[in-house]
Every structure is written in structure tokens, then in C-alpha cells.
Length: 424
Image (tube, rainbow, N blue to C red; front, side, top):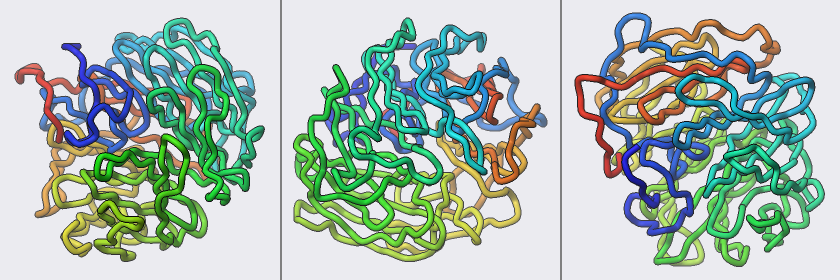
């Protein structure tokens, strides 16, 4: 760990997100600024047969699909034990369990039981949302609960697949999406969990996307993708700033991706994708909207003027942000799954068979630099379940999860100097 930085969004969101972390840390869902990318460098550029060396394997995380948050030498992840949902803290060097804290009753369904979200770690505190809607604030050093509240008590209703959101922390408040007629998006006081505001202009039920922060002309905007609309909300007062129609019909899962003033959104079941540009007006400019990229829940990565991800029914795609058209498609090389990015490479995880691929981003096509298969794999999986946890890259390590198994791989290239990037 070398120094600290205050996370900014591509140099635009100055001091907008309060998370202060080492550049290599992954302190919340989708990384430091929720774009699925790590600034870390000095990583392996190819893998030998069998993949990078495994550093450790933790085998007692129980049910759940949520990913880890990494801060310093600690990993925080949600899972289950003895029929209840817990927040676990592990030592990143050894994988040993340091503490566990109960965060809620067990959620069960046909796709798989347990928590779905990723903890958010800020200023020595952890904010973790259980699948049944219990939101807990926990001391990151001791595991002691500081406060907890239920989203059901503030008007929410458990979605069909359980709450899957990862809370967004901004200065003195925690933003989340309980859904419901009392205000679909709310801000809670970080100190005690009390409601600061409700966005009463939004009344639809929650789906599964997480909030992300954007900026337009110096004004911060909390962006959320709901079933029927892509919305921008003032995080200070809860005012609905703008809304664009969205055709989500079954499950809206992916978190929108922000780059400068541009916001890209996609979801599955034929909903498609949209790229908008914030322009200081009541309604953003729509750059394009089409059905090319219908991303179910594996996420997308934007690099320069291209978007990469898995499109249902089409395979892995590279899409132009200039016009929304397909640049290339790969249907045979790798199965449907999740994607993350660090040091000039994608880390892709196939949800069906646990294959993990290192891929070099290119508008010229799929350029693989190694792969391996997760082993062991869970025997707890329900018939409808898959390997849905996104890859996480932090402090020279790759973290993967298959229900009760949490894997840690050493991906540092010992022949290269380990430095930080200013931003991919």
C-alpha cells in the first residue's frame, strides 16, 4: 500500500465520492468509482496453463452471490451460516476469518439463497444490505454493529430475487433503493440510519441495480436504473432531476456506467442499451438507444469510445459509443458471464462452467491471454443457480467466488514494477 487518494471520476468528480482508499483497494461494488475497473498496474499480462497461483481458499462463506470489498489487508463479504445471513471479515494474506456479524435472516428462492450485494467500506465503517432488506452499519475493525434499519420499515418491498443493491455512501449519507410508493430512492444518515430524504416522485418497486454518481455542470447526480426508467436524483435533497423511459420487463440488474458526462445503461430480457450525455438541461441528450447490448447481470466495461460485455443471445460484444453499432462479436470462445478490468486486461468469469479468462481489450476482436477453471466448485448450487459473483482485483490479487468458496489468486508480475495508474 503506497499512500492514499481521494477517488475521483476520471478527474471530473472532485471529492464527490467520500470513499478514501489505497489506489489498489476495491472498497465497494464495482470498485472505487463503480465502473468495474481497478487502477492497479504491475499485473501478469498472460497466464500459464492452469492459471495464476492460488494463494488461499476460504470454504465457509455459505450461500450468497455478493462479491468482496477489499480495504488494506481485510476482505469483507456477505454469506450465510446456521440459516442466517452474515458479514464476514477475512485476512487477505491468509484467508483466515477475523470476525463475523449477523446482518439478517436468510433469504431463500429457486435461484439460490443468501445475500446478493457487496458491502461498502468507508472511514472504518461497513454498510451491508441483506437480501431481506436489513441495512447494517458495522465497525470495520471489530465487527460490532453500530446501527441497523430495515428497508421494509421505510416503505420498501422485497424484490422477487431479494435485495441485491450495494449501498452508495456520499459524505454524511447512505443512498439506497428500497422501492415503493413512499419514495423509491432514499438517503439515510450515516451516523444513525435515520431517513434524511425520500425521492417521492419515484414510486415503483426496487429492482437489482445499484446507484452510481455522475456530475453535470458542477452538480452531482445519483443515477439509478429502475424497471421503467433511467433516473437522475439530487443526492443533497432527493429531487428527481430527470427521467428517461426504460423497457425493463423481468429483472433490471446492471449498474449504469459513467464516463465524464456520459452514462451508459443496459439490462437483459430484450431491454437493450442506451448512452446519454448530461448537458445541464432538464433532460439528457440520448446519443443512441438500441437492442444490441442486452446485458443480463455480468456487467459492462467502458474503455475509451467502446463498451465491452456479454449480450444475451449474441455473445461477447464490442460496441461503439460513437454510434451504438457492433464492432465485433465472439460467440464461441467463452461463455456468458461477468467482466472486470485492471492493468490493460479484462478478467472474465463464465457463469456456467467457472472458466476464467484473461483478455486483452481491443476493437479488433477477442484476444485471450490465458484461462483456467475454478476448482473446487460448489455442490450447494440450486438447479437455477450459476456462478454470478463478479471478479475483483485488488492489491495484486484476483478474488473469485462460487457460493461458499472464496478464491484468492496472486496475479502480480514479479518482473514488472508495481505502480498505480492515474485511471484506465
